[in-house]
Amino acid sequence: MPIESPNTSLESQRAEALRLHIEPVESGQQAALASTIARVLGDVVSSYESFLLAEFLKNDTFKSAFDSNPQVFEAIKQSLALRAVDLSFASCDVLLAPSLPAATAELFDNNVKEWERSIFPTYRDEVVTADLNDPTVAGRVLERYTIEQRASIFRPIIAMIGDGSKYTINVGQGTRAVRRLRRPQKELLRVYTPKIVAPPAPPADRNIVAYMKVLTKDNGAPDLSRKGIKEVFYVEEMENDIYPFKPDTLRYDGYVFILNRKLDTQVSIEDGLFFIVCEELDITVWGDSREASEQAFSFSFYALYLNYVMDEDDNLDEGALELKQQLSSLIQSVVQQP
Image (tube, rainbow, N blue to C red):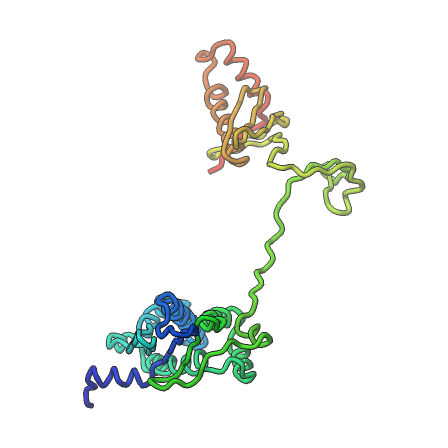
């Protein structure tokens, strides 16, 4: 098999390349702005990479490999990266074509290599040089691509075309300019650049204070179901998590403290910190959040239990003994979880 010389390979790439010719609209201007060239090329690359991914995932074998290892596509995307195989700044002619490094021969089977050979001509002919005002083209695009894929593939192309006030673009294959790009008509524009509607955000949780007349369950607990609520007297939404904290069970470090009654505390916010104060046990804790301050409260109660209830009476003074007795009468039982 004869070896193709680098010059022959480059010529074959030029023959198949996508040609972009940017013409300034203003009279007397023969060269396009560098910023225009950069933006046009960036739009093409963005559209092309979205097209590659969309087409790659349509093949079940390729998609299975992608789901297992997304880097498979990254390797192919790099191998098919667009290169300027010819460029003239004077007339702003650029020929874009992918190069296929020889290293890919060891990485992919013949099916992938065949897909690589055909994918760029497909993009050139069915995306960039296609007549986007042709209803047949629009119908084919609508059938083949999802809303997200259409937006990512064709939105950059529409942006590249612009409004025609500063430049126009001729496109073609190789050295032949085939046609001038024109924006799709308004009714077809929605096909190529559909509006992607974000899913509605889930309703946010709200904290409220309510006074209600409710039924009582068999176990004595209030029935807060829809049928259990007989009348609502007052409802107020709380700006912050400043609802009462009256625990009858506290947990910390594997210890579960079951109390004989609910503790009375005051909850407040100062300088962005949540404070919980229990005057009865002389506990004051704070945290960056309601959850953090409640955890700090549980730790403080646990520390009181270890330092007073579990200590020998001989080690405690009169005030400490009173606190020990107070805690002992408050705690119904202590469970140690593994």
